[in-house]
Structures are given as structure tokens and as C-alpha cells.
Amino acid sequence: MTNLVPARSSPPAELATLSSLIELRIATRSSEKSRQTLRDSFLRIVRVLRRKGIPIESVDDIPVTKIDAAYLGMIRELLEESEPALGPSTIRQTLGDLRTVVKAAYHRGLLPHHQMEGLREVRVTGSRLTKGRALSDAELVALLGRCDAIGGVKGSMLRGVLLVGVGTGLRISELCYSPMTKRGLRVDSVSPVDGHLHVVGKGNKENACVLDAVTRRALDAWLEVRRDLPWRHVALFGTPSRGRILRPNWLWKMLERLAKDAGVPRFSPHDLRRTFATRMLDRLDLREVQILMMHADPKTTGKYDKRGAEALAAKRRGVTVFDPGEVKEG
Image (cartoon, rainbow, N blue to C red; front, side, top):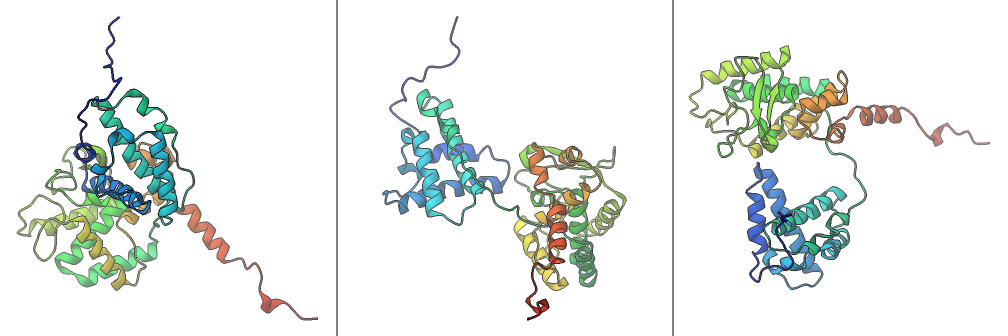
């Protein structure tokens, strides 16, 4: 019987550089954030190798033929020792990115089979508390009140971003349209057939967001304002002053300023997504919310649930373990 698997008993004499393999993987990433995450992983690896005293200027100084299970284990130990601020998930991500590039080299016939053995056995243990929070009713009311006080295009747009973000659970990369990837919210994202908000986002997945009455009214109100603006792009949201396509980093700054002016603790755009998930989980089961959020794993959806932590914290604050003022002498 013919063997369809190509033999890889020994690597070719001329190996591709590690940076060229990294660029090949970067090209497969759907968003700039995920591409930057991959770059950061290898910058981190170069940094810890330098601290170890290994003379290295760039990733190309790392011979591809040396990256086996033992090498991966060494990188894990260096990250844990040299980068104490890194959480297990970041170290896990870094090793995963390195493993992915090594696998790409193997599938291109650049590495022998035995070099792949044991790579998946190098694991990272531990965990950290999940980040972010869900916004309360009072915080949302304060933020929307500030939007109304700002008024004009900026106030209307920020109000639309807040209510669409909370009402759909979209990521910031989906709220903001990207001309490069052609992904994110457009003016014509609302389907005339089903009335859902269609958007292509992370992982090149299309999501049809079902809109409740409040979210739909907020979207329609912004679209009415948007139609009268001289903007020449297709993005749903833009910069109020110049009408440029709204970028994620600009939205970050605008929401940060809005929170400060509204007297609300700082929050991230992703907290709008966490708010959506937390409130949906009050009414729907985990599997249903997982589908709405386009998560491949229900464990990921569970990390967005802020109900338990917030309720427990409220209960804990109401219980005094020991009050020395209540102790009577004698």
C-alpha cells in the first residue's frame, strides 16, 4: 500500500528562518490584535533568552532545529522565572504560538518527525482571576446621561455604541469596521430579511445578532443621525469631528473619557460584552449564550459570567468577621 505521508527522516540543509515562518502564521490571523499577540509572543521569548545570557538579537538567532520538547520546557521555565508578572494564560499563549510555528515548519517538510514528539506534553499550570466586570444599571444610566449632555453627533454616536455593545455583546473589533479585513459593523449590517444585525468578526465567523426592542431603537436612532452626515465610508460608527472610520484605539479613549466625565469607574469596551453575557445568563442557559456569543467552548462563555463574583462580594461586605470596637473589656 502506498504511503501517502511524506517521509521526514531528516530536515533539508536549507531551513526557512523562524521569522519567515512567523510571518506565514501572521498572514493567517484574521485581526490585527491576534497578529500582534503572535508577534508579542516571540518578542517575549527573545527577551527571556537574553536575560538567560544567550546571545540573541532576533528570533532568527533561534535555530528551528533546536525547538523540541526540551527547548519548549526551557522557555516555559524562563518565562515563569524571569517574567513574574505574566499570568499562566499568557505563558500558555506564548508556548502555544511557538508550538504552532514549529508545527508549520514540520508540515512544510522542514523538521523530522521525532522533533514533534512531546511538544504537547509541555503544559502550564495555574490560573488567575478573570478580568473585567459587568456594568450596573446605575452606571449605564449615568453613561447614557452623559451622552445626552454631550449631545450632537458625538453624544448620539456614543449612545449608539453603548446600547448596541451591551445589547449584542459584540467585540470592539466588530463594533469598529476594518477596511482592510472588510469586517465589523457597516451601515447596511441590518438584514432587510430577518432584521438581525449581521457582522463578520473574529475567526472569520458571521454572527446574526438578534436585536431586542431597546437595542433596535438605539440602532435606528443612530442610523437616522448617521444618514444626514457627509461621511463617505460604509462603517456604522466614525469619528464625530472628521467622520473617519472609528478605530478600536480611538473608541477606547472616547469611552475612557466618557466614564471619567460620568463619574463611572473606568471600564473597557470588552466590559460591554461581559455585561451582555452576564445579563443573558440570568435568563438563558449557558449553551444558548455560548451560541449568541459565537464561542467554540462553553468554558470561555463561563468566564464572562460576573454574577457570582459580584453577588458574593456584596454578601461578604455585609459580614464583619471581627470588630474590636464591640469587644467589652473585663
